[in-house]
Structures are given as C-alpha cells and as structure tokens.
Image 1 (tube, rainbow, N blue to C red):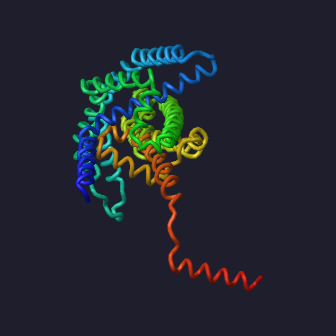
Image 2 (spheres, rainbow, N blue to C red; image 1 turned 180 degrees about the vertical axis):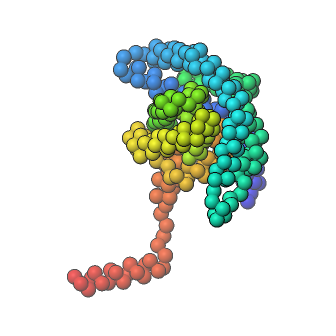
Image 3 (tube, rainbow, N blue to C red; image 1 turned 90 degrees about the vertical axis):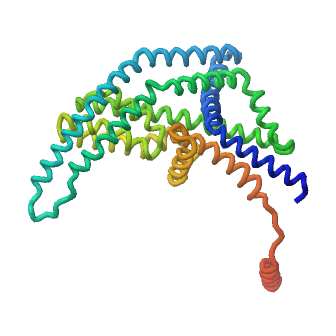
Length: 361
C-alpha cells in the first residue's frame, strides 16, 4: 500500500473510533430523526388534505403534539406515578403471599411424588432483586435529570430537522460519491417510508394492547389498572421480551387477592397476545418492513449491548433502517449486479449443452 492509502486507512480507523465514542449522541440523533419523520408525515397529510402551505401545516402539527403531551402529563402522569409508588409498596406483600401459597401447595402434594425444590426459598432470594429492579425502573422515568436533558436535546434536534429537512438530507447525501448520490436519496425515501409504517403500526398496536389490557384488568377488579395498562402498551415497543415483562406486575398484584385471579390475568394476557400476533399485526402492519424473528431477537441483544436500555427500545426501527440499506445498497446495487467471468467448468458444461442442442436440431 502507498502512503496515501495508509493515510486513508488510518483516517477511517480514527473516524470509526470517534463514532464509537459518540454512539449515545448518534442514538439521540436517530430518535430525533424518527420523531421528525413522524411529524413531517402528519404535516404532509395536512398539506395534502387541507391544501395548506408547509409552514401552516407544521404549526398545526406542533400545536396538536404539544396539546396532546400537555393533556397526557396533566391527566395521566400524576396518577401513573402515584399508582407506581403504591405498587412498589405492595411488592413485599406480594412476595409474602406468594411464599405462603407455594408452601401450601408443597404440603398438599402426595408423599409418593418426588418433592420439588423449595420454590418458597427461591422467592425469598429473588425478592430483593425484583424490588430493586422495580424501584430503579420507575425512578428511571420519574427522577432522572439526565433523561430530562436528553429529552430536551431530542426536542430541539427534532424541531431543527423539521424546520428544513431538505438541507439536512442534502448534507447527508453529500457524504456519498457523486455517482451514488441520486441512489442514496432514493434509499433515504425508502427509509422514510419504512420508519413511517413502523411508527404508525407500532402506535396502533400499543394503543390496542394497552386498552385491551386495561379493560380486562378492570373487569377482573385488579388494582392499579392504569399502571398495568400503560406498561403493557409501552412494553409492546420491545418485541419478544416486552409482552412477557408487561404481564409480571399485574400477575403479582392479582395474587394478593386470590390465586385464581392471577391465573385469570395470565390467561387474559395470553389471549391478548394471540389476537395481536395472529390478527392485529398482520392487518395493521402489513406494509411494514418484514423482519425475521431471529433477526429481531439478535438485533435486540446487539443494540442493547451497545446502547443500553434506549438501544433495546429502538432496536426495531434501527433494524428496519439497517435492513433497507443492506437490501438496497449491498444486495441490489452490488451483489445482484456482480458480473464475473464463467469458470472453465461452466464453459465446458455450456459447450456440451450447446452440442446436444445442435445434434437434436
């Protein structure tokens, strides 16, 4: 390699190191891009249906977004925090009730059956871990000054991107060689469509899951319905893991009333997930970029290991964008257009086939 090639290679390594060091900042930038894409799609709908100019459409979109957030914070957040605190206070009672119930089950087992390991003692060992995890989980949403600063940063970035998205897109496209800039712009259009479809579909799914969970828990007269319904909706953003996590706390609270109620809650959540998996997702998210279950799971582990909790929440949109770029850039533009000279074996086979065709004619 020449000196210039070595210099370019070192520059690439330095760039990768810098990107690794600012990976959290890049993730927040991606969050802002997702929000800006969603708001821009809504503004385009106002422009199209009401025939408004872009400035007025953006102003209406921002006003509706602010109004929704203010109403949500005013009406929902105080009750959510209050019920969350009550749930944390009830968790020690849940472990006591669960331990008593397991011991009663163990004593009623026939003597000729092999005795299972002491589940009650296992519950005692798990109690501090679950209590600490639950406390840290709700503190993460309610008492974190760092989260507030990150949200403010994302909001400012979103407004900047929304004000003039074309200039930011052109600046990103200029990172590519001149011959590929038009193609890169087309791929960005595909990413915008994919993110919009994902966001619309996942929002409908979360509202459906949260509402259905709240209705079922209210009918079963389980305490702290609002917390459980919101957690069921929010955890639906996390495929595979989220639905299981959302069922833990309502099961524990229902166990305080009666074991049959906890069983009913479990059955209700299973029914909800079956409806969501076999009817709602194929219907609502038919236009979403299809992802294989194994790819989704690996992406969750990968992005969670790099970015933490926020990476786990954003694993699906990150995977959607990554899949679009891989399909368009790597498969369509490189692999599908790869032209190679045929090997000696392929030439011999072709000659034999040509001779057979000539003889048959």
